[in-house]
Amino acid sequence: MVLALPLARPALATTTILTFLFAWDEFAWSLTIITDRARELDQARELSADLLRQAKRHGLSDAQIGRIRHLPAELVRQLRHSLGIRPVFKTVDTCAAEFAATTPYHYSSYDEENEVIPSDPVSYTHLTLPTIHPV
Figure 1 (cartoon, one colour):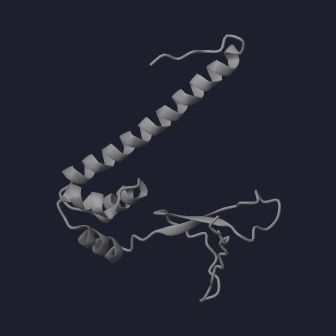
Figure 2: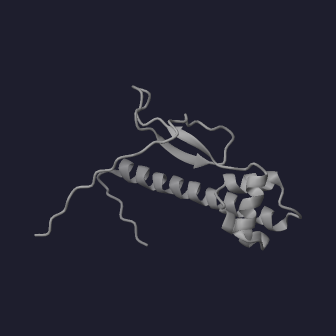
Figure 3: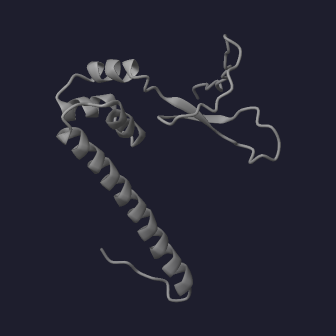
C-alpha cells in the first residue's frame, strides 16, 4: 500500500496517521481480550458464573460460548439465566446534560447497574414513514 502525504500540511498528515494507528491499536487490543476470554473458556474445567459473566462482558454470544465449550447455545442461555447473568441497560445522555432528554439512547451491557428508568407498562412508539409515489 502506498500512502501519499500532503506536503503542504504535514501536521495534518501526521495527525491522520497517528489517529489511524491509535484506532488500529484499540481494535487489536479488543481482539486480544476476546481471544484471551475464548482461551479461558476453552481451558476451564467448568463454566463458572464468573467466567461466563466475563465472557458476556467482553462481547461473546451464547452461541460462541457454546461452540467453544461444545454446548448448544440454548443450554448456555439457560445456564446464564439460572446464574442471574442478564443484560442491564445503560443510558446515553443525548442532550449532553444541557436539558432533560425526552428521547435518551439506551444500550445493553452485561454490567452490574441498570440505568433505565421504567416507563408505563404499555408504551408505544409511533413511526411515520413518508409516502413514496411512483413516477
